[in-house]
Amino acid sequence: MKKKGSLIVISGFSGAGKGTVAKRLVKDYGYSLSISATTRNPREGEVDGVDYYFKSEADFKNLIDYNGFIEYARYVDNYYGTPRAFVEKELEAGNNVILEIEVQGALNIKSQYPDAILIFITAPSVEALKERLIGRGTEEEAVVAKRMKRASEEALEMENYEYIVVNDVLDECVLDVHSIVISRRCELKQNLEFIEETKKGFEQI
Ligand code: 5GP
Image (cartoon, rainbow, N blue to C red; front, side):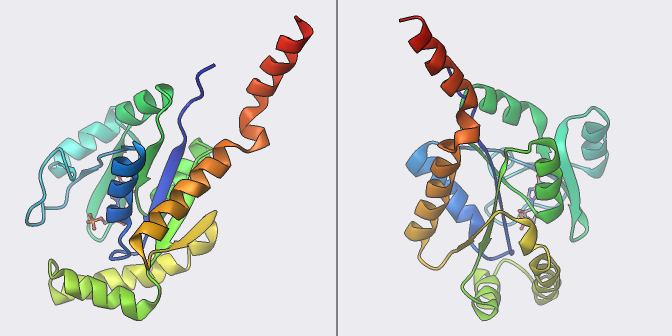
């Protein structure tokens, strides 16, 4: 019996390093990473179809109308959404799929996919977070301020997540997330079909 893949939702403050963690899960453990669509402008070095599918607002709204997203949200003046087709195909093929999305999207996913694993990644402290955001150098001061404000709002939502992982040492953080996923896949309630099959197998002997 081929098990479906797990859906892993990674959220965290802007600057907590969740993008890096997600990329490592792909590289080290073969997870599939969903590429979101967004209406925000590409940052320097970002590539269409690799980092995001960059869309006009009209195209994005069209995709909403055609049920093209499993969830979408507005974040700091832009739309972000998770394309449906890729996620469904990968889960069906038994692959673990990572969504790197913000809090509203995460809660939306949990209500549609109750087995989804909700993980919040955070920097070791608020000070460290601010330093990382400034250090990234990709955002203007006003944008940093807006993102810090949004992060303070997101902090209020941390309790909606199932796991909190501190990203201090990257290798440890990646291992923590992978361990959570393995542990969830081994949970009794995730294996009820397998148990039934095993019992039947014994009855036939
Ligand atoms: P950024 O502009 O820094 O790339 O992303 C801003 C926020 O949008 C991040 O918290 C990121 O996780 C979130 N985000 C990216 N893609 C999606 C998506 O498809 N859906 C939702 N709900 N949030 C997303």
